[in-house]
Length: 469
Image (cartoon, rainbow, N blue to C red):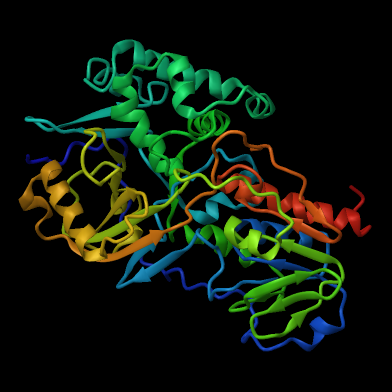
């Protein structure tokens, strides 16, 4: 089927700004991973992990004038929130969209400096069959006239569309503390109780939410669904002009000089002596240790952490494939969902239709997301299958020139968020002088990671008498 570029639903984006790409230099980063002699003598906190939670903790410690060293095992800050430059293309490490309504992010980040590029508020749903077609579902409160065209589309019934609007209104008006303390079930059961038909669940809600939670079974907590749905209702979905990694870069640039060490992998944590690295060096931590790594690594470093029984279906993995193209088959800055129930593609979008800066001038970046690990499948095999499948969406001649750039396999994309959960967050104190933060300790969102980082820093400062709070 041939898909012609539809008319733009929002004003056309400005021409791409050619700028220095995300090769930021963090003033805080030491030039090498050699031992810092000052570490052995000064009283400081140590943060293990330089993802969003660790960076948020570091930012708050710095604001309280609490000395610290942040240890990051890799050569780049940001954890999963990172961007690579490949031949002039900006490749986020996995499909990630920033929700501007996150309250902690609003407090901590400089939005104008990120130059956020918004998505169209809605989704373009692909339906297969003998006559494949696309159907736009628009936010009725932002584009009421445009949304009228979807009223009689086969993506759900008219009552379904009304219910989406009512659910949006209710979520937007419900305080966070009410959402986080509400009776909890799975998202699948919650949608059924709300009255959504199987048609709109299978064709729209399942692929849409699977792209957010990496959970096609929709076993994720209903509380997290309501929380994210509220953020979607109150703000924009967007990409920073310089890639999703610009969020971490902005936080890192605020840290004191010499406070960050890259390529410094922690192997043991002992607040009485400090944090031992894989080189054998021990970094003193007289003020305490904040463990800000992702859940599997945190459980290795801190055996005392409470663990949940491992579920066979609790894996939250994703594969993201990037392609270069000469043009975008769909020019709107919109997310495309696979509502056909067939194939390996869950969602995709033309990144340069949202942010032209994601590719060199005159080129198009295509982002394709699969849900699951696809272990045992080679990258080239997955790329070929995805292109053939999308040839059924747009026509074989449209995808024939796509060139595979890179594949990202994110084995641990999110922690298990099946009930029971504690999306409001848990006490960061897990031992004398030991604190934990991360999206596994709060809600599995950008905001949850940052909130948990702040709370860990506040708890450490309070326990050491360094804060009046």
